[in-house]
Image (cartoon, rainbow, N blue to C red):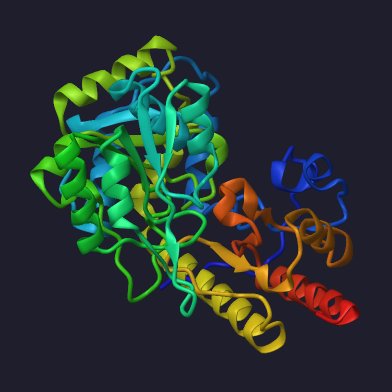
Length: 394
């Protein structure tokens, strides 16, 4: 297997990088290690860069279309990594997964309709529901106080789906890192069928699965789920190419797909961009080995942070995610307000993590830590945190 370098630190300042150059508005200082935005610090794979360079050599960048090989690359990747056979005709475009979630929601709801989400969850979901005058229905995940694992409250989910037209599923779940099991997904499907609810499934982190867990596309499990689900995937997180704004909607049901496409057409955003198509096609055709190496490296980062925190700062709840390059740290044992916690981490520890409260009230007392960075960065971050903790006697 080829050796890929994830250890080299790459200075991103001067590239209009949000994660590194937009710190002042978020943290009030730029003197923090940025561990917040879900954007990895690894160089984009060489085969993707080379494909870009080949396309750049042609001096005209006019209107393009997505050729058959683009669709074949998506089908091949999904088949190899999850065993789901999808038809190229099921594939629709989105400039991003959140945009795809929005198109999916608009295609099956009207103003005032209820949409279920499972906080603590990726905050743009609630925002897009509210911005489009739909009603947020929260089905909070329940955390096991011993293991830290999050579970679905199915009794509450049944009640909430009875009031809803759509359910935004986040699987793997951001920020908790859960990978829902077949049994859990089938139970979701049972309730969605009972209440005739459309499933809009954000599966952008599905390539980051840590052993022994396995990701299953909910739409692949039953014919009914296939017919009522809009599945969103993208290479943006997996291959660190979010700047190309290219995502995939997989919609087996023709009527549902047409309704989704109608929402895309309303704002004339179907064309996408040349380089996003090149990046996606290349990543999904050639990226298997790179992805395997990346997940191994991320597992090492997770293990490092977990071992460090449990040994040196046991007052912070630290749990290993089943997926994603994000860790969900529980600081509630410190008894601080969220504002005080944020201030301590920024001003005393010099760390810019993700404020857990933006993921819902269920995230109060938590911070989201991005481990998609060279190990040396995490070593420095943990050292700074430990020094601040010892200084203040926590």
